Image (spheres, helix red, strand yellow):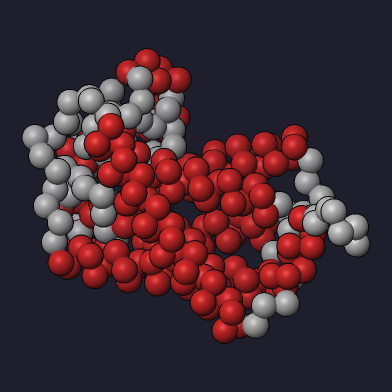
Length: 241
């Protein structure tokens, strides 16, 4: 191995050699970091963005919400460990020599495919019985705060993770594409739960799932089920402009 060049496949070899104890620690620390990153990003935008509040005030932070968020960090860690198990057993194959084009293509594909799956998953979560059991806690946040993204029933968090794993089993994505998608997902979710519009108003015409787009879903639970885009809401008649 050239000492001046440490290839992507070499990083994968290091991770492959991790013990399960190392994976558990790595998974927990990674998801705690991502949780804190989301909070930090929310607070940064909140302090620097001068746009008016979408709601009169942010939703108050409760102790039960904090506990639920920490439980969901644990659930995300479990999903990550399940992904490692599938990778170790060759149910998930990672492309070890991705090109720039394939990375961009795969990242966009993950965004659009997950947007479609999340639309139906989110729509199903609003069916009366399922909503009462699983999703109603999230909608207590009519206005939002820095924890709102993580205030979910654990089954929702695990369901979201299983959808990603199902896609990863169906195609050999690269770890770079997967990481980019997960980072975009976290940032988008954080921005989507701001109490201030982050995007320019003109973005709505490009089918972008803006902050206001998702905020209107919290105000009207029968509309705007999409996450990254408004494509599926427009197509299936659940869009509210």
